[in-house]
Each structure stands twice: as structure tokens, then as C-alpha cells.
Length: 458
Ligand SMILES: Cc1ncc(COP(=O)(O)O)c(C=O)c1O
Image (cartoon, protein in one colour):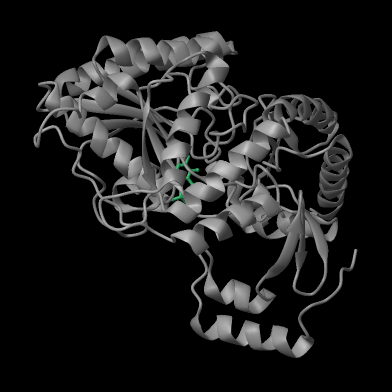
């Protein structure tokens, strides 16, 4: 579908030349995008975006897992503009009404209504902040040897030095040793279970919770400050654990005085059909890290939510002060955008829609199981789902790197009008929460036709 083109061929060529000479794209090989041409976009509305050549696509990844209220929300742009033209940022050690109001708004949505919010500029900063807060909380409570943090294998918690240590090593590049005191436990996976036989989700959970407890004992509980996990890990493959897993984790962390950090940078603000992912399993963590959908990407913003118990440990004098400062954490333009974003999400019942449309999407995706290379379909909690492509359904063997699924799949999907830059042996979906049934059918049809094409080509 062609839209009005706002950039001439000459301008596009000039932009590509400037990018080729000067731009670093995040986590992309420069030679690859110079060869294929860089994707640049000029506008968006709802789930749809138009590139500078005038081609329209459905963004089934919602940006990089964040465009929850969809593209083109004028009310958010107006709120940011209004804030920037009144006071763009306050003098040092003060704030603005927009930031104060957003803290109260987030608290209203959270399990613990007496929680306290520390604003950051994004997900990695939120994780750094939460880990530091957890360590200081333990010190203030007399657990002075507690510096270790347990995370789950194959997770992703950000790219900054401490956060990257908590994820898989391939994210680190040759950065050197990870954060001292990082301890890993297995992640939840019912497709390739960590124990032999054909265990049920509850049996897997029981084993994993026991494994966590053994790891805690082995490492000495007095040395462990926190356990961090995403309610649903996209980097580990969008596996949905049962109630028994999360409730077991909560019990064990509480038993040993370890703070539970839920990394809700992707799942926070409605993605799983509840305002926060942990609400799906009826668990309240001690700290929750959020970012992306807080503004739906209209401005960079993150927030760490500390329960009243944790926040109260920081009330006192100089010793109890949380000496943590991020110049642009909670920037008023971003908090004004965040307020408008949450207002729209509430008014348009987007979280309810995520639940309903998520079930519809998950049901439709089951139809794909009949194809030769579709090994698994995961999701069913809100609008987060994945289709796993395997070489052999019997053995669950993956395609090799030489098969180049990460090169093939995004191209096949794009030919069908769908954007998913990360597609490979998993085709993941994280569309805006205001998606319609018709748009889900467009996604489904595009994926089905991609899979058929792939089967014929491979
Ligand atoms: C679970 C999780 N935590 C942290 C981060 C880091 O967020 P950011 O890229 O905003 O620093 C991400 C980013 O995708 C994430 O998915």
C-alpha cells in the first residue's frame, strides 16, 4: 500500500549516505544494513507504519516490544509539547507536577498501593537501579554480606554493565568479567524441559523452585541480595509458567530474605492482559522494573517500583538515603507523555483488549501446528506470543546458523507487509494493545503464508 511520499529519491539517497558514514545502529552489523539499505520511517498510526519510500507495514513487534498504545497518539504528543513549552526540566533537586502525578498514577495501578517510584530513562537503568536498591536494602537491614544476585539463564535484563551480567554471555561482547556475585539458575521451559520424561508444567516448576532453593543454600543465603526474573522472558523464548512456579519462587525468596525483582520492562503496563505481569500469577514482588510501555515509546522513561516495605527502609537520615542519581531519570517531558499514555490506555480499555485479543491470537496460532517445521506455539497471556520453527519436530532440533533463518524470516514477513526484525527460529508477536481482530487475522495470514513459503524454499 503506497502512501504519499514525503522524501524524494535524492533525499533518501543523501540520508543513506549520511547513515553509512556516521551512524552506529544498535546491535546491528553496519555492513549488513549498508548492503541492504537502512529502514527509515516517516509516520505511524495504530499498528501501522509508513517508511520514507511510502510503503505501509503492520508492526507486529510494536517497535522493540513497547508500542502499547499504538502509533500516532496525538494526545501524547500534545502533552509532551505542553510540558516542554512550560518548563522543559526543573532546577536541580526539584521536580514537576507531571512527575509527581505519574508516580501516583503508577501506584494506583500497582498491587501495593503504598509503593514508591524511582524514575529512570529506560529499562537498563531501571535494572541497575533496582539491583543497587536491593543491595542497599539488605545492608540497611543488617544483611551486610549480601551482594549476590540470582538471575535465570537465557534472560535479558539490559545492556549496561551490571544489567548485561544478568543475561546470557553473548550479550556482553568481550566486556570482561561479569558483575561479581552473579549466580544463574535454569529458566522455565516446558517445550525442552530441564528434567527427563514428559513432566507436567507443575512438575517442572517444582523442580525449578527446588533448584533455586538448592542454589541459595549452596551460595549461602546471607550473601544473596536479590533474585531477578521477567514474568515472561522474551529472550528465553516466551515460555509461560504456571501459578505454582511463580508462587513457589515467591515463597523461597521470602523464606531466605532475598528480594524478588520482577523485570517487567516488556510485560509492564498491560502486555499480559493485566497492568503488571506478576498480577497474572497473583504474586507481589519486592521491586518491579519497568520502562518501554510506560510511555509506549513516545519518550524515553523507566520506573522502578518499590513496595512500601522496601521504600520504608530508605526513610531515615543520611545513611538511609538512596544515593542514586540519573540526570534525566523521570524527565518531565517523558513523565507528561507517560501520564497521557496511561490515560489513553485506561480510557480505551487497552489492557482488557490485550486479554481478549491475546486469546484470539493464541487460538488462531494453534492452526499453525500442522506445518512441518512448526515445533511449538506459545502465548495465551495477553498480546505476547511466539511460533517456534524447528528442523525436526520429533527431536526438536533447531535449524543451524548456516540455514540463516534470521536473514530469511524477516524478509518473507516484510514481503507480506509485516515487520518483525527479530524473526528467526522464533516468530514473535508483541503488537500494540489496541489491535483489532481484523489486524490479528492479517498477522496470522502473513505468518501462515511465510511458513508455507519457507517450507517450499528450504
Ligand atoms: C526484560 C528487559 N529488561 C531490560 C531491558 C533493557 O531495556 P532498555 O533497552 O530500555 O535499556 C530490556 C530491553 O529489551 C528487557 O527486555
